[in-house]
Length: 428
Image (cartoon, rainbow, N blue to C red; front, side, top):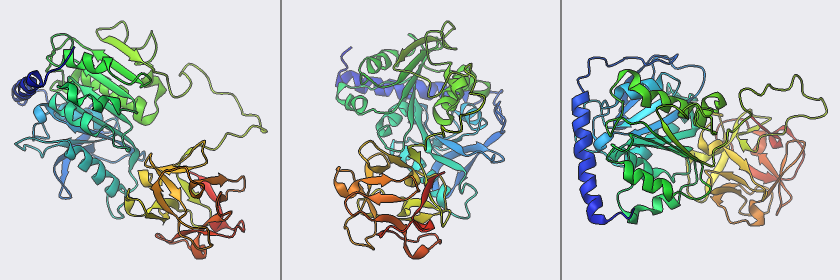
C-alpha cells in the first residue's frame, strides 16, 4: 500500500471524527467499573505539576514499584476520562497509567504530552516527600495510544526511556512518516480491530515496513475501530493489554506465553495473530529452576542496573536527571530512575539513557566524572574489577566517592586506587 499525503489528511479527519463519535457514545456507559479486576483497586487523580493529564494509580500504592504506561486518547481527545475503564484496569494490576488530557477536559492533545508524563514520573520518583518517591519503575516505560493517540505514541517511541510501544487501532497516515518506523529499536505491539477497523490497512502497511530484526506482535480482534475500551475493565483489549504489559514491563514470562510461539495463548482464538522475532526473556514457565546452584558457579552480575556504593549505600547518579553532555555524576538515594541505570557494554563502556557514557574529561586524580555522548574513546572505557572497584582505562585511576562522603550529591571523581569502601560498587 502506498500512502498519499492527500489521503492521509482525509484519514486524519476520519480518525478524529469516528473516534470522537465512539467516545461520545461510550461516555455514558452504565457499566463503568471503578477499581479494575487486578489486586490493587485503582482510580484517578490529577497533579498540579502535570497539568492537563489524568493519572490512574492503585488507590493504595503497593510495595512493588509501578512500571509506567503513557496513553494517548482516541481522537487525540483532551478528556483523560475517555478510556477510563481500560486505564483503571491497567492501573489495578500494578501500573501507573497516565492519560493525556485532564478529567473532563476538552480540546486536543499532542505527542509532547506523552513526554511530559514520562518527565513527571521520573521527577516524582526522585523527589523526596512525593508519595511516588521510589515507587515508580522508571526503567520500564510503555508509550501507547488509540487511533489518533497511537500517532502520538509513534512520535515519541524513539525516546531512550521507552521500553515498548503499543499501537491500538492506528497506523501512520503518510509515507513521509515512515522514518518513525525505521528508527524503532524497542519491541512494538499492535492491537487492531480487524478488517472492519478503518486503521487496519495502515496498521498492516506499518507492520510490513518494520525493521527486519524488531520484536513485534500484531493481534486483530474483529470488533472494528471502536475496540472494547468502554466495556467493563476495558473488555478484551483491556485483558490483553494487561498481559502484554506484565510481560514487557514486569518480566512475567507466563504472561508472555500469550504472545510467543505457534501455540501462544492468543493463537487459535478469536484473535488473528502475527509475530516477528519474539522470544521469552526468560525460561518458559514450565521449565523448573535448578534445585540448587553449584557452589562453584555463582550467578554472574547483571550487565544493566544501578551501581551502589559500598561505603554510602547510595547509587551512581546523573545529577538532576540531565541528559545534556557534561552532566555531572554523583551519588544519590537509589530510586531506580533511568539516570541510575548503567549498562556495561562489550566495548567496556558504562552507558546511561542508552546513548550517554560515563566519561572522564581528564586523567588527573580529582577529575570529576560526567555523562557524555558515547564516542568510544579511552576516557569512556572502564574495567569492572572482581573486588568491586571500577578503573578508568585511560587514567588507570578508580571511580571514587570524594572524601569518603556518604551524603546525597557527593561528587564522584577519579582517584588513586586503594580498595576503600568509597571505591567499591555493587549491582543492586
